[in-house]
Length: 163
View 1: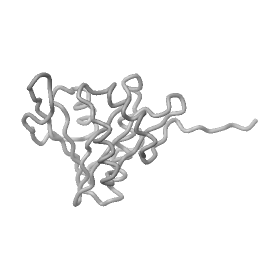
View 2: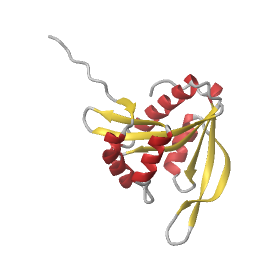
View 3: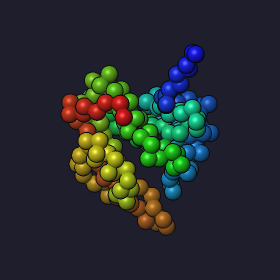
View 4: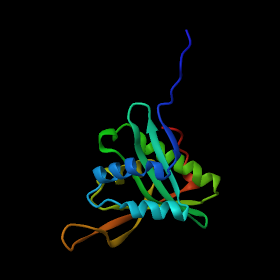
């Protein structure tokens, strides 16, 4: 009997063909989602963009990062709400850290809403440290703004394997 091995999940470079699915995830995951224009701008600027696929659900997540001098800045990491809690975010963080190592980046940065405790806990478990707060960084209801927690991961200390 010949067994067919199918990967549990697979990352590939995010392209324009992925945008409809990515926008659908973005709109489900966030109250204030990125626009198609935000994604297109990121594509055209050459940001690091990966989409996560699973055999059962197709596109279930993505990340976008900006490469800088000796660092990467994670701009967006999202998993479709029905697929959360299955290790997809950690899998993408592992891949992002590998990209950072390949680029000899010393540090990985991100901002996360102060109210997004689930994401903050994930990043803290992964090894990110809170390094500051950006006041009124994110849009909120009405004319309000929400603070962002700035987090950083030193790549020399990042020893996470596939997860």
